[in-house]
Amino acid sequence: MLVFFMHGVATRNVQYADSLQSLIREEFSQQQVALPLFYASFWGDVLNDVGKLWNAVHQNLQAFQSANPQVDAQAVFRYQNFRKGFFSEFVGDAFTYLNSERGIKIRKLIAEQLSDFISRNPGETELHIVSHSLGTVVLWDALFSERFHSDDPAFEIRSLIQGHHSSDFESESSQQKLQLKSITTMGSPIAFFNIMLGIQPEQVKALVSQYSDRGLRWSNLIHASDVIAYPLQPCLNPDLSWKLTLQDHYLQTEANPTETAVRNFVSSDLVNRVAKVAGLVNPGVQIAIDHAPMVAGAGDAHINYWSCPEVARLVADNLLASLPKAPGTSSLLQTAIAQLQQVPGMTRNFLPTGQFLEETLSELKFRDRSGSLQLTKNPAGVHHVCILNAQNVAQFRGYVGWLHTSGLKQAVEFIRSSCC
Image 1: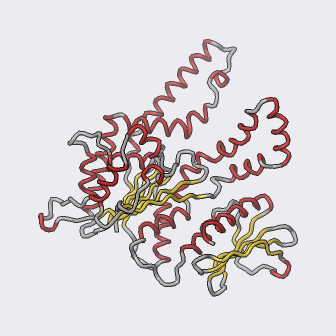
Image 2 (image 1 turned 90 degrees about the vertical axis):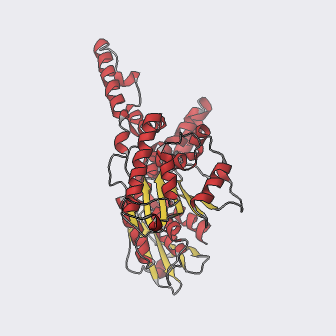
Image 3 (image 1 turned 120 degrees about the horizontal axis):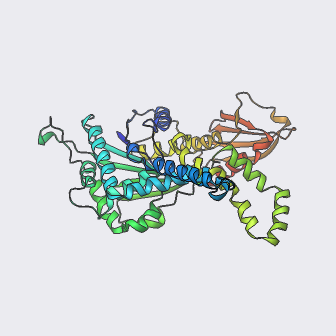
C-alpha cells in the first residue's frame, strides 16, 4: 500500500506529514495490519513570493514613516500581523499556483516525486492520496481539468495513477499496474476554486472510472472552525452510477485553547448583556463579538489536521476500507476516545473515581454495541468521563477543570450524535 501526501499553503518544511504518519501507523498497528509505505511530496520552495512582497511593503512603510514622522505606520496600515500571517500565505500561495509557469513547475515536481515513489516500490498495487488545503486544489486540477496542453505534467500524473508506469529497468510485460484506491482531502477549498476552474461533475465521473475500475473512495475532512474548508458532496452529488463513494466528515473539536476561552467569554451572560445594549447603537458590535472565536481559531484549525488523532483515524479508515478489520477493534469506540483526547484541558485518569459520590450526567451506548460512555460530576463540580468496552472494561478515563467543562460537554454531544 502506497500513501502519497500533498501539502498545502505556507508549507516550507519537508517533514510536514511526520506527525500524521506516526498517528496512522498507530491506527494500523491497533488493527493488526501491515504498515503502509509513505511519501510526503514537497514543492513549497516554489511558493516563495509572499516573503518578497512583504519585504517591499516594509520598505515602503519605513519610507512613509520617515517622510511623515507624525503618522504611525501601524495606524495607516492596520492588522499587519493578520495580513502577513495566514491570510497572506493562503492567498499568495494560491495565486502563485494559478500562475501558469509556476503551476506547471509544481505539477512537474509532483509527477517526478510520484514516479520516484512508485519506482522504489515495485509490486505495490494500491495507491492512496492524502492532500491538504491548496494541495487538494492542485490534485483536483491535475486529475480532472481540461485546461492543459497535451505536454502538461498533469497528464503524466494521470498516467501514473492509471498504472501506466515502468522504470528503465522493467520490461513492458512486468510493467507496474497500480489502482488508485482512495483520496483523502483535508481543509479543502475545492468548492470555491472550482468556480474558476470550471470542472464539471460529468468530467469527474468519466475520469474516476479510468483511475479505479473497482470504485474510488473519497473522504473530505472539514474542521468546524476552518473557514477555508468546504464540503464536496454538494459540488459533485454522485449517484449510484458513479464509481465513487464520497463522504464529508466534520470535525468539531476546538482549534486551540484560545478559541475555547474566547468562545466561552463571548457566550457569557455579561458579554451577551453588554452586546445587546451596544447592538442597539451599532449592530456591528454583535457581529464583531460573534466573529471573535473565528479569529482566534481559524488559522490553527486549518493546519491542525496534520497532528489530530481523529484525522488519523478517519484517514486510516479510508485506507483500510477494503480490508477486513482485526477482531476486537471498534471504530466507534475509537472515534469517541479520539474525540475526548482533543478536548482542551483533558487529563487522563488511570484509576477509578469515587463513583458513589458522583452524579451521573449522561450514559451513552455506541450503536455498534462496542461499548459505552459515562459522564459524571463529583461534589466539587469537576466533570469526569469514562469509555467502557462491551465487557465493561474501562478503555479511557479522564477529567477536565471548570474552565474546560463546556468543551467536554460539546465533545460528548458530538459523540452522542455521531456514535450513539
